[in-house]
Image (cartoon, rainbow over the protein chains, first blue to last red):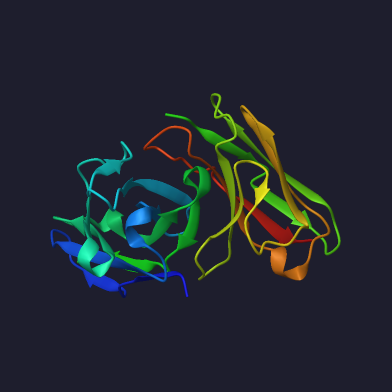
Length: 118
Length: 108
């Protein structure tokens, strides 16, 4: 089965660091970039950026540049989204996605809930 | 940045109806326009890519059209499982693949 499986929900305090993961299976991981999408509580979908799984070249949406970083471990077909210092405003569900035709997002992870609260 | 504007924001409809959601881009995006369905607690699902190509497994009651700046998603006839929020997304402007603000399709 082709799928993306994300790590579980996280509860963190402001200022803490966090890395969430997204593991691909059932397909050739290096053939598709992995993107990330944020959904804040009660809001719509926001595109964060994507990372090429071949060379780990990451491209960030301007709204997220410098706020998060993306990485890949091709040996275990896993992509990561990392925060060095969380804020309460990072509370959201984060989805990883796989590149499809015309750079659509044809496969989605189940989402990771991140809650940042003191 | 390319802005994507969907209308309406909310759409009351009944089973069996024909509904249309529109998506307008702030500049030309050719046909780099995709539609997603999102139900609460679930991951979004790709319905249509490249403005009018149905993703594998998506029922034929979904259709998309448009190019340039104006696009539409049509669902006909509406089935009970279609009540959800729908988003358009452009992938013309790398890396800012912006989404529309969403259209909530509700039971009338």
